[in-house]
Image (tube, rainbow, N blue to C red; front, top):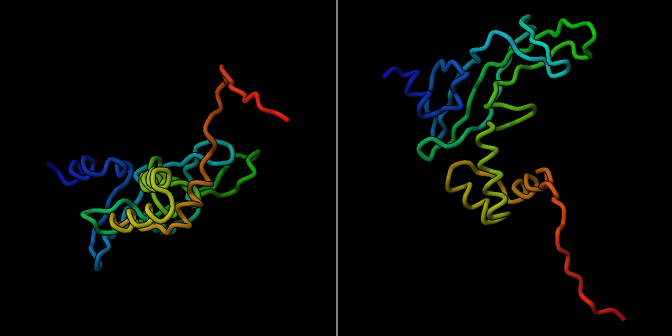
Length: 166
């Protein structure tokens, strides 16, 4: 089994990444990577762009590996949008299934944090995230709950009303 196949089996959300190196610094696993795609979809108009404007490095947190904090260091490209009717001139690529706009963590880590926040809430959730090396404070967990969209409201079939009134 090659290293690429091993990474794909253990970390399926890394499939769209080319991992350059992995190193451990203290209790943090640092993973340097770059995207495999040659183009990106413009967030303004939805057209594919291939002309690169610049590159920069992001540092989103990821789920823990062997109870050690994991930080990705993906090299992200900014692209020019060549469509004349598009209001965006440049935009940053998002690695599908891994990053999202203005995100400081991966999609997988955000999902896990949301589930912990909904199940346990503030202090208990903060203690659990600390034990699993994905630490998040109680206030941040509550903010995460508030930022979630409201569940869909279904039509009420039966409504019970108390008969008491003055």
